[in-house]
Length: 364
Ligand SMILES: N[C@@H](CC=O)C(=O)O
Image 1 (cartoon, rainbow, N blue to C red):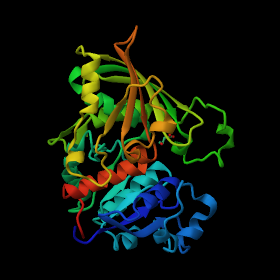
Image 2 (cartoon, rainbow, N blue to C red):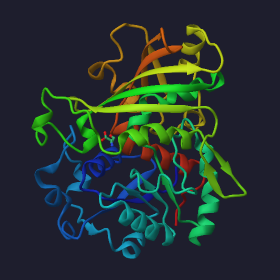
Image 3 (cartoon, rainbow, N blue to C red):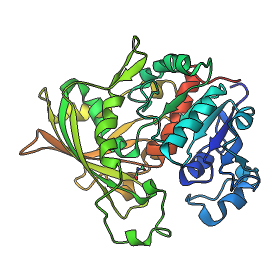
């Protein structure tokens, strides 16, 4: 491997930013050279800027501690020193859309964890194992932005990652009516039990905006690139998803219970076979954060469990269990994915690795 690509993290002090800082320690392809945050943090060392708000299970990496945080609003200056940026910025959506576009227009690719650009038609929203072909829309986005190198790519919401991989694996059986309940960890809200004590022994049956994301984002992931329109057209087949999203007293790991109907009959053996033998270009390319086996199927009645299974494949794999026939729907199952690894910074990092492997992100 030649010289590493230089990367910056926008929104480096927040929880997702901290996850990027942690995952990027000793990364074989990428080197963090810039930590950017609000003007309030600018000029402080990363250690000072984060203070007692470090929320990772592992200590702050040494490489980051003494880096001086820069003002992320100075897009042109920050972008000058990096090959690409990760965005974990937390501000109103219109401001996020604007700042990410400003970076892209400096000819700096932006790989974002944020939802602000997920429905921008020429921005690919990618799970590398499911829809990497959507990166082809970048050439159209570049025309709109007037760039040759800069673009924005995003990953979808954490809540969809526990069931959308199974729907992808079962595509040939035409899943069409899907009822999902998600049981979402508190880290999805950027919290720990220390800063959200009301969640100890509690359930909150509301997560703002989450049900719309859970129902609609899989349709964009299953969509296709329309080259004439220069955009991603969401899947317009019979797939319909309805959901309820619930916050539960778990630190990491979003569980989903799912009922579904298929257009074509399938046996249990066929369904399990398609899960465990799911292959993808991401695994073939040997990306550093691509799981070797994307989906595991657990046969025990009491799995997947957060405590036992959330770290499957370093938190980048998906665990499915309890697949059984249902008396109203065709089938039901339970899925589990790590929300801050597979579902957030890890998913964005794997997108960046794939973008590099496919030649979309290069050295400036
Ligand atoms: N919006 C999600 C974020 C994913 O982890 C949530 O609140 O859980």
